Length: 118
Ligand code: HEM
Image: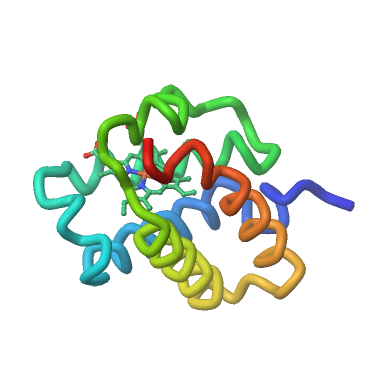
């Protein structure tokens, strides 16, 4: 089977999905306060390249690892769940199928211990 990267529409598709995910975060009352001081373009770039690299695409991610990126934030489980909801909604918006959504959800959920209460 082709890589998740290919099935998400390669860099072009993942750029759209990541952009929509960040836009949903900015409208999500559980998450938006975390991003008040953020550069939205930089956050979208980081999320796009993180996902390109981690879905089997080119090794373009140059950001921090997940522990370092979230250290000191003390993100809770409800925030983490809300972020996953936004990611699933962005996948729907971009016409991504059930199988790929399951793979993304499984991957993201696996990062919980590197993001929550760090
Ligand atoms: C599996 C879930 C998550 C993934 C894959 C993820 C991914 C990332 C990535 C790639 C970065 C950029 C790191 C860098 O710039 O070097 C980042 C930063 C950040 N994340 Fe997450 N994140 C997740 C969950 C969350 C949650 C649940 C919150 C809060 C509700 C959150 C809040 C932030 C904030 C505030 C930043 C810093 C933004 C900035 O630099 O201005 N993240 N995350």
